[in-house]
Length: 264
Ligand code: ADE
Image 1 (spheres, rainbow, N blue to C red):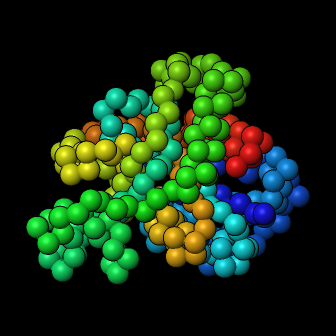
Image 2 (image 1 turned 90 degrees about the vertical axis):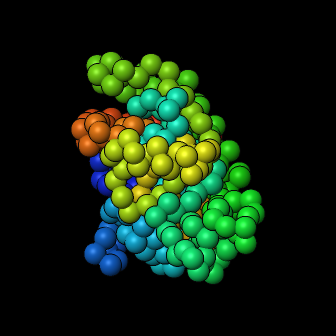
């Protein structure tokens, strides 16, 4: 049983890479894949690069070349739910590509010909939204891992001054809808529009739904863990960069370590 773990950028996963044992590196399509043992589980790690194409091709390489049995994406996300704060955690339940729009041929957000995300727009498309979905068991395991990390390890794993700097006390963990697109969302109008169109939306990011789609093609379990780095409005760039530089990788390591050691 091998697990593929992907992050978009090195800073999101570098502490996890440090913990990888007996690792071998293989370069495919200009990117490195590290196979090895992580907390006694067989894994393949990759830094995919930003966006849907990069992450989808990384997931495909993991599946086709390394034969991983499941894929986990872990990284930062921008808050869409106004109750969220920096340092909170989202475990993806469903995923929509917010920038796919082939109207009037297909409904907004529909990924043709899958019929996924068939939602909104006109009476002919009036049906319940269907989105890409996380594997329920892996999602549950990721949620449990995040809960354990927050309740048991947060204050040991992350330096106190960093928790203070980011005003992180007891992070909230939610499960729900994640919207993916090839855009870094950084203004109130855009995030408000997405909230209006997708009322259950928890967070925005740039890879989850693409990897979910690849995993669906291959009938493999997928889970996505997002740590809130910013609120997707005017200060998003500054907040994101600070979070990524100083703290993101502590979260990734803590949650993934719990996921690997408490069963998935
Ligand atoms: N990942 C982290 N923050 C983000 C944002 N504001 N937009 C898109 N992806 C993100």
